[in-house]
Amino acid sequence: MAKRIKTEHAGAKNGGGYWGLRVDAKERSRKLRRSHDKDTVAEVGAGITMHDERHGNHGNKDTGGVGTAKSTGMADKWREMTLGEVIELKRGYDLPQQSRSYGKVPLVSSSGVTDHHSMAMVKGPGVVTGRYGTLGQVFYIKENFWPLNTTLYVRDFKGNDPRYVSYFLRVLDFLAYSDKAAVPGLNRNHLHQAKVRLPIDVSEQRAIAHILGTLDDKIELNRRMNETLEAIARALFKSWFVDFDPVRAKAEGRDPGLPKPIADLFPDSFENSELGEIPKGWEVKPLPDVIEVNPPRPLHKGDVAPYLDMANMPTRGHSPDAVIDRPFGSGMRFVNGDTLVARITPCLENGKTAYVDFLPHGQVGWGSTEYIVLRPKPPLSDEFAYCLARGTEFRDFAIQSMTGSSGRQRVPAESLSHFRVVTAPKPIAEQFGQLIKPLFARSSAVTKEFRTLAALRDTLLPKLISGELRLKGLHNVAVGGA
Image (cartoon, rainbow, N blue to C red; front, side, top):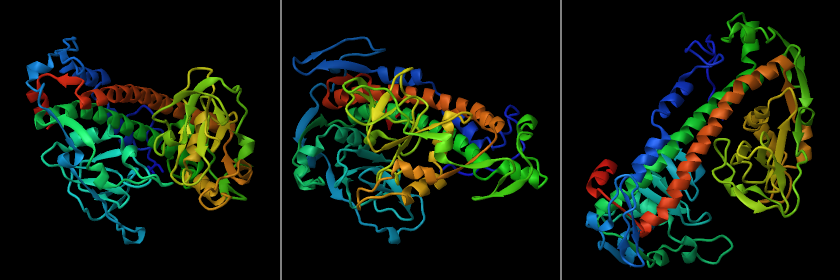
């Protein structure tokens, strides 16, 4: 949930605030953008050379200062060995919820950092992968951390570069070493026997890690930019439509911290309703009266259309990492401007929610039958439903409305008719849309940028790890990445 931001007097253009909200987050987002993506791509492109493993030939294609693999002196310094000769994996440590205490140490599960604790078990940097349940994801942790017992972590890197190892493990076929149980698990002793091939010179490992790490760092920078933009949007929504800050300020004789034309739209008193006090002149309505639930979208069976699976539904931020084209079978259909909410456990509790802005104009997409599709009715802006769905009130209501057997509980779409929405008069609803749309538009542009970078990283990753692509100027790159 977005952190509450104190209301102060500051106009949208005066540099001291953002529609009555502190601009610290906005200013941070500007600073995060100080390097342009094309500079990142240029840096990554410099120093890469093609090597044909099948014939032992070394390409000389110009990618901005490249050379041959032979020019690096590293052509024959790759060696085949077992994974156990490269690293030692160890099972993580149990830490029940009741034993956890507040702190800043990441707790790493098979799906990544899921919580924090006051004490670390492993000194960073480290590498963690799933041992049980979610297999195949690999996490590079820079600081000291606590790997949970659903994971395997690298206890001994045996002189190899930790970040290189994190990329190296991403191309390993973990499923080939898992058991055949309903919930797959990894046996580290079997995994240690995997045959692998890698450069034995750590400087080459560091050079490869630097290239891939530059892309990953830029991707993470863009993610943080998006989180900042969304924090501003959700804070504004909460201030206006949940906490009624502008109305409360005017009722108490305080400056609401908004430009006068916007402040004048809000009343200066409250009235009673079934939900308690609400701003005078506002109304309480069932959600389907103001937001369409699962609106019909035309898509014929067999039509190839963008498909969003549950695994790629975001738990933070509004945009998924990946959408693929797939023939339509059965599932929920959506268009740009819709909000998608996962309605099944544990996806709902984990916060899987998306705002659709990733489709080509006029395109209908589709996804899991376990989505609920929301689309606001005028005068509410499309983004209103997303901000509402990310809010604590909606999430708690949806979780309490779940039905079905344990482990397969879901929210019936019909239950949303019992959720009440406080609606503002048309001028306020429209003003909110005018303020919020540029934030989502900027976030969408940033998302496209980091998808481009992610595609480049995913293309380079197997080629660099396999040695199909080699690096020039290894010493200088390695120093830069150290």
